[in-house]
Length: 419
Image 1 (tube, rainbow, N blue to C red):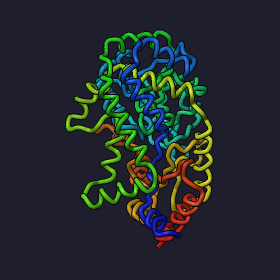
Image 2 (image 1 turned 30 degrees about the vertical axis):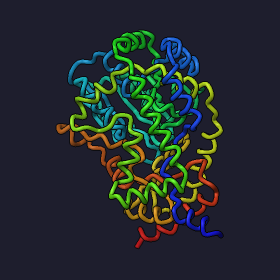
Image 3 (image 1 turned 90 degrees about the vertical axis):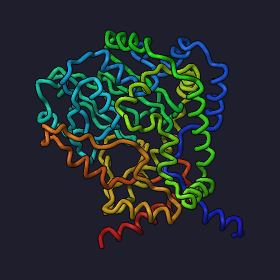
Image 4 (image 1 turned 120 degrees about the horizontal axis):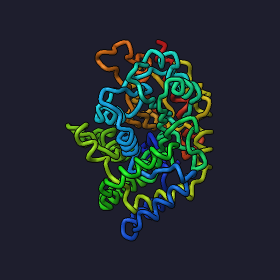
């Protein structure tokens, strides 16, 4: 081995996540910031590419779509939304911003689905909706949740932000609304944008009318996000990423903060609830719609198949000391591959020493805490899972040799947890 190769091997660090977008896609998006126009026409292209177009709504983000949904429903203050106990905190902020209450339903973490027995416990005369999230690229059987909702006259909303499988999969027909995200980290990323399938024509029309009153996203803002993403894609090879990690160490910067800040669509602020609605209440710009239409039109499921195979290969060999949430889910594509470790920081540190950037912060989801007057609904299992969660860097671009080294490192660290 030459000195150069040995040095490159010492510097290499495999990133925690490989963005599902190419340089050519990003350059197309940047060029669209100069030429794209005709939002109505581009919106029609998006919904045609993600049929059935008669029930599709193209939005700035899933948060935007969910906000529009609650605005269209105009539920009374104090009414309740049952929420699967792990989701993005902004979804809870949106519920509360509409004067509603979010009541968590703890998870069966083996399949990452709300426990049916707890749905009955969470139900009250004020319950109007169930919001469930399909996590980490898996999907659970929506049948029991939908049957419960139909018995009690509740709306079922499924958040499929982490579970996109291509335009031929518009969500479970048992759901009243299915929401898909194409943000920076998501499958088939367009660095923003969302599509909601709303199966009630009247409700969809109300949401469209509300959306027409929103300002349009500034194309300069979108261009800035595309440039940040381009930088991350270029740094996404092991040696450049390893150099970035070392530079952060030398300068005293936090690698997690740097990477997560670059991909976060809506940065955290001191007045999170107040500023959230200002940030999400936008219509997608013409350049965003142009890139989203291109990504949907040219979707190739080959990478998704390879990602699924890579995740299954690693999941089968995980040591017993590391629990794999969602291991019993009926369908998985491994957008992320989580494990629950007794000492997550030790696992992360050990893997970084062997050249793999495992992380606790690849996704911004969090447990949904129970309202103060409902302590019995505190989601203990979800909290326990999230407290030990580590995301392993598994994606199709990981060479077989690197996959074997990752598995050996994970297996080698596992005995430390039994000591």
